[in-house]
Image (cartoon, rainbow, N blue to C red; front, side):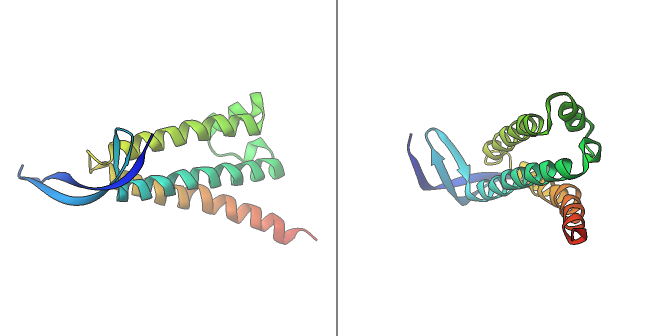
Length: 141
C-alpha cells in the first residue's frame, strides 16, 4: 500500500446549484483519497476519542462506574468492566471517525460536522473529566 500527497480538486456546489472545482491537496492511501483538511479534522477527533477514553477510565477508576454520564458505557462497564467497555466503544467511535474522514473529501458538508463534534467532545467530555480528575488530584494530600 502506498501513501502519497497529490494535487487534486474538490467539487463545490453552491446553494444556487452552480458547480465549481477548487484545487486542494489530497493524501492518497491506496485507492482512497482524503483531503488534507478532512484528515487533520479526523485525526484531531480520533485523538480526542483516545483522550476521552483515558480520562473516562481514570474518572471511573477513581469514582466508580456511576460517574459515567453515557448510559451505554455505564451499563457496558457495569457488565464487563470499565477497560473492555471503553475499548469497545472507543474503537467503534474511531472507526466511525475514519468513515466520516474518508467521506469528507467528496461531501464537504461533513467537515463542519466533524468540527462540531470536536467542539462538542472538548466541551462535554474532555473538560468535565479534566475538572473532576484535577479536583481529586488537588484535594489529595
